[in-house]
Image (cartoon, rainbow, N blue to C red):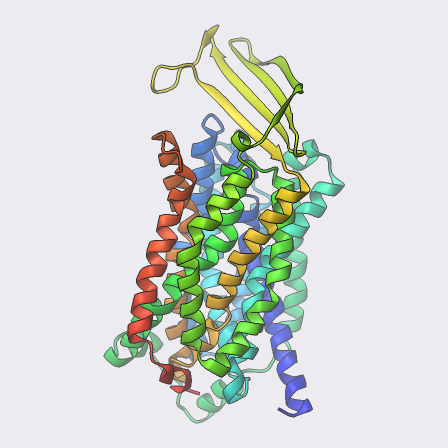
Length: 512
């Protein structure tokens, strides 16, 4: 490739990537703050139910992504790639900013979660149109035999967006006190996004249309009905279904296991202190992100199928050993407590004249440097202890572990390994999808299987897996923490079998 053409495609990638990264940031800031948001927009009398409701609202944004793919994909194949993902950028940015302005549940009651849900749905629609446009736009500028390498730069934007969301949260927490962050500081990351969206808009408005689409449009070869041609044509529909069940379905669950489920697992199952989790996850993402480009490049050399299927198979085989090792690294039953450093501080928190909570805070130290704070709350109403649905004394227990450096770096490595799985399945996927479909229906055809695989199969993973873990824990299963993995393992296994049987290497050059 000449220096002039290289400079040109870097300009395309920079403009496309910045906007896509910001949209991922906007979309994932909600997931990164899920634990905090569960206390702001949902009833707090049942923390587990509130957290699951937050995850369900988070998942709702994924569920509608396929509808955004259909709506904006159709526009992208009719009016062009550039103007379509300009619209998605503005929609996403506006919805994210407004989430940061919504009053809490305590202020406006059930209107709060309803408004949040509506805005999450708008975010999902926007993202459904963004990714296909950006991936198609870059691929249509890339040289014939280098699509895997160049589109892999777009693939980094999802992880970079998540990483930046974690950085913004950590910076906000470092500037504000814990009380300030809990009161209003959590809104700052949502507000910050509007500035990034404005900058991206200024950059994108000066971009040209992709040469492949511009050529097709000038020759009158664009589609007047992309939806019908994409899904009403049996030949093309076959490739849409193959893309979904043989690639993106498994890629989606591997992606969300390695990043979001890992984060939720560390915070809610292992009870690691939230800032430590954000830090170690951020480190793992920094270390792993270059491998998106490596595996995209490798897929140009040995084929998309080889790289993606290998990533799925390794993930299927190693998830349970990895999560068992993660859990055991912070299991207090395997550590030695320093009894002399244990302190119990009782206190009473009066809510109103008839409600009093008894709160007991216990701090413990362990010989390996681990610090644990356990807060037990007993609820009273009208002078009587509140009972749970089993007739027993209702006690809420919150455990927070501040882990030592050895455990921290071990967990960084465990998450990093999972990020490698992500890069193997995700790095080549944009080029794989673009090459399956002709220019005139490419935006529509590739967007739907991508967003069904990621938005539905992947997006539902945190809520489904967390539910499996919670149910198994309540049933007394000693390995409850592994039960959430059956969902990604099962989905990835089915996808691996279909992909190995039906995906042909020739797909790589089908519509170059």
